[in-house]
Image 1: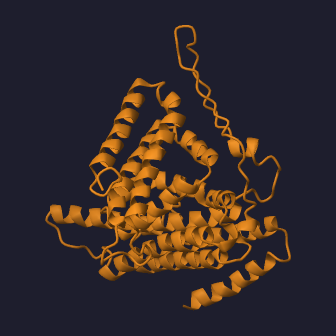
Image 2 (image 1 turned 90 degrees about the vertical axis):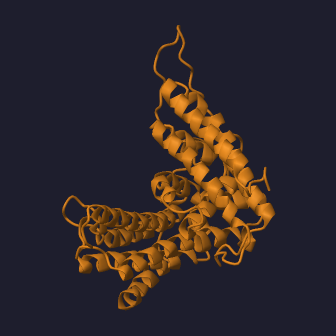
Length: 369
């Protein structure tokens, strides 16, 4: 409590600087503040996380405290009235400049150029800004999703460790985390993902100032890139959770929002980046399958999460339609890159076919409902 009170003084100072200094100067100060907090979660031995490297209770307590202060900073920044304006939201006009890969043939056997071009900067963000567009929204969303991922990873590592000890006939060691510690870590993971959905996505998506179609797209663009990137990285974690796990439910809601409302150009650009390496794009396809198995739990029921409140059957069907549309977009944007490798194409095609079959057979999908 004392640490949070002291952090309020620092955050009051930083938030007050937005009215006095250029955003680039505040961005440097804010980034340094969050970096210091994040450094508290690491040891000096290879900069591995304390939670994964050491079972010392004081170090673990320091790690949890640092994450709580980071989330508190996100909470203060997310409620600023000028939050959207400070991100310089781009206005996406025209179509995405797609560059299809030339297929290999007998006369053209040169390898394709996969150099990553920043399409957003080249075609939309033509003005050099400091800080760049979406700097604040991506910063705070990265904080929420990284804290959620690392907390879930710690719980999974501890469960695997205890399962291994039990299988070998041993007893719970002194270094094992206590039940209270695991509950606090689980609470931290839930708190971070709820904050990402409620304070960042839902709060700004429902803002009365941004209810036109063009404004809704620009607001969704604030969070499209970090949500897609972290979701692809978190596939192994989400796959270990039950389909109706509260963290997985809210994470899938965040993903479906950006896929539904995010600008087509930004989504295509991120999908293109996931094609290299090709395993990443297969992870994203697996992510869509995980989302389809979770969507059926959006139907209202007595035990629905308060943050969800029980979505209507029509909204649940729309979630499945969003997944199907994402599959079409995925094939259209990535097929030419994946088809260069026969094994990669076979793996990609099998994953796509698996997702579509899963949507067809899910009890609450738009096909079977």
